[in-house]
Image (tube, rainbow, N blue to C red):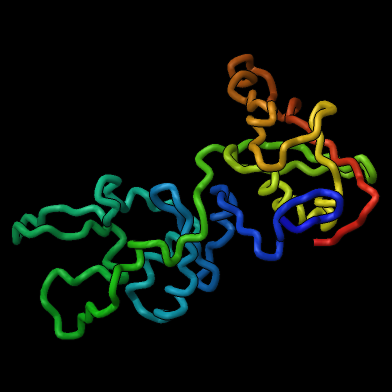
Length: 228
């Protein structure tokens, strides 16, 4: 692995996070920046929206931009939910918001073209990562500057992924040693694997304010200064 400061780590110019929180997905809620999540994954449908700009069949998708649409799908088949049309007895896609892109019309139409290949919801071409089913807050304290930031992170994220989240606040984050309660953190591991337990449920049970007990990770500056 390339060196980043005095800390060995990934090349953040090509680094890809594996997890995104629901709050992050919700920020991509415009036709020119359109993300959705479903069945545990996160998808960037911006290219799809740009390709079909102005198409009325795009409207139901734009309406759910930034949201989780798992309820559109049958978790067993991973396809759009189906129902039996009482008029015809035929199976139809269930689309409460109205028919959308790649859903065939109920009746044969001369303007229906099914030469698009796989429907947009099948495959991984638009997938950007996994949805963090569980998130938690941590505090990151720079011991050099005394600056403190609270981050919402996914419970399954490695410390490298958390460091990547922290870069907007400190471009030199990989030139620090990350510690918790005096021990160096293993950057390949999660918070839990590093012994930083998520005690939020316990605080809720005890009617205590968990925000007052958010774990604090301390950053100690190394001799080198590397900007990422």
